[in-house]
Length: 448
Image (cartoon, rainbow, N blue to C red; front, side, top):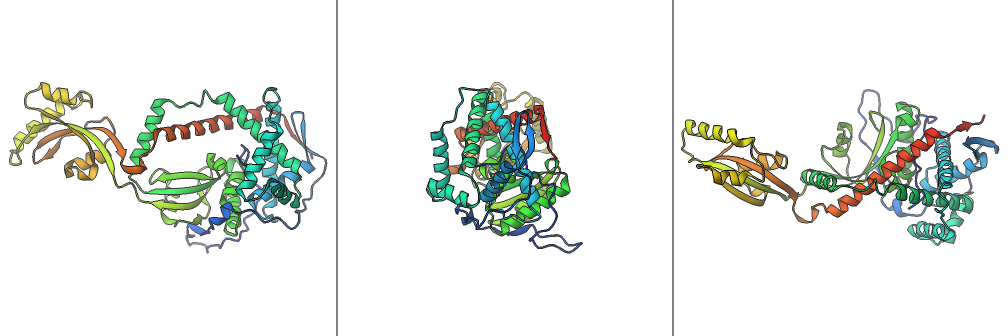
């Protein structure tokens, strides 16, 4: 667990359109790629700021969240922490967005603290916080003392870091304990996900990082586009993609630094698919507007689909030589069509044995590429458990049952891994709903 984005989205309504990214003349289509990122920046420690930025705001109470207050000092501390974690350089254009994002995070944190207070047995001790700080510092190759000193050079009190971590750890434990039962994944859901992964595994694959700016949370589509443009400019100039995604993205992948994993061709919106096709590994996209928001895509890697697609099939056929008359072929086709609706993977062989003139066979599991040409299209396109239309070959007329499909070799998805992924996704969704409900029920007052 790192210092991560809280469960509200980014708020960028105050951003303007200025950007260091090259602009395109009217009437010309902008290239998809904005620039190439340096992968080494993801794991490199941030350079300590020479001096803390100066933010002009009152030191008094800015917001009350039920009976808890957020002061100007609290907000300045959180803005400094946000800047330190993302390495986004503050400018006149992006300071309002940083301020709003920091304020949203503080509001959520106050609500989480109030909810955690209802569970007196859930206490996060100093040792747990120390372990988290040690883990964070280890990731950047520093000692805990040096890491906290780096933050202090940016004007961030160690107590600010400890308080945020304590709340974050406690909230994670609360969500896990409260929703663990509801987040359990059924066997049928795992099987469906494995089947879907197998279906997609023969297609082109893209290893993607994503940042999603939700328009409804930032004051509209234009504000989302402007904010995304600012973030792209900062990342091209060196801000680590992973850190920016953690703090600014509204996508579920934000908690994983924007890591969306391997995505199969044809499973995303057309505008995103176009970007996936055009981006080369290491390139960052320009902002991509979609309905409801704006995406930024980081292409980490690409690969062709798995070479071996293994299919389990059974058949029932009427044997006919290649020289059979059209009338004989039509009669065999009609006979098979008459029983097709009654057949399944379980009964097809028994039905073939029970009727004179029918032959049945279990074709076993085979690589699609090794099947007869007439069978390959059925093997690739038919859904599992379906019976094909009659297929003519030199040997006769066939009905084919597609009874299983999987990827061959090491790329085959592991059911246990898939189950864990689905569990984490479901738990994260329940946690976001929990946070949304707390916000809707809270009395949040902004002071002038």
